[in-house]
Image (cartoon, rainbow, N blue to C red; front, side, top):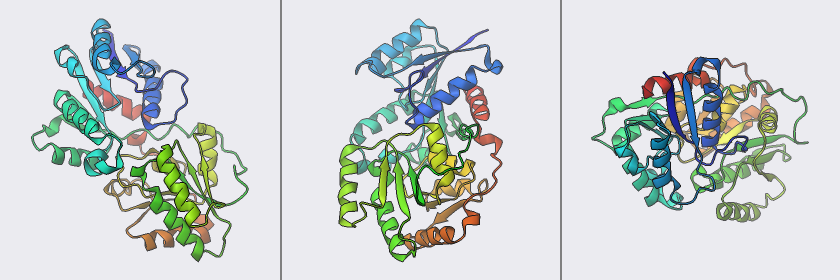
Length: 344
């Protein structure tokens, strides 16, 4: 018997550039479903791109009904209200709850909160990407049935097949940040940390490279800070890059840096770890969840501790890269297996 799955693909569409976490997830899930292991699964992709404001609330439920989908995977974190009238197993995906914790860092936090409150009630199953997110979800919704929440780590093995270039993409040493450039990522703090590091470092030519799609207003505020610190020549912004280019940036950086206020998984941190690179992060609960798996993850409790770790890695090149065996629960094959187990 064929299993029909309706997939909320966000703004993903076939052959679209992978420039967001949701696009990465949808793309990798579809690649797995195309394999020989899932001949009985028929995925229906519903992309929100250029579909208008009412697509998610009205037209999407109509498509699910028309196509006789038995399961709905809500990768965008929203389940339409009308699906409550459909005979379909609704699976909600939540990655973090930052808009509850830091609403001032979001453009429309109340909309996100209302959508999530509704979706949590409608969901038959909820998939989260870390134990800490499950714990936060139970705290946010004390009456929720904890048994309908499952932790499934996302895959991080999608970059391993890309050939590594021996030459660096840049003619200088650099620390690296990868991710969306938005207020929740706390990049003003990262820039200040880098500024203090450079003042202490004997090598004044080390750069900070920031790769990712930027919210224009926030980027402008960061540029003002960079000008104030007189670091215009040392902090470089790069827009979205291809996976091959991204691997090259990872492979030749001194270390990946991240000081985000909230993370529910953090693809860039785990991508760099999967390639054996050193990663320095702040003291978020999610990273403690990863330390049993990755010895090249360095957690810093204070700004001074963060800077010290940057200095140590610069002085000891041999610890920049380590050989890593990716745990099976961090592979896309495992992830899709778990999704299907939880959906049925």
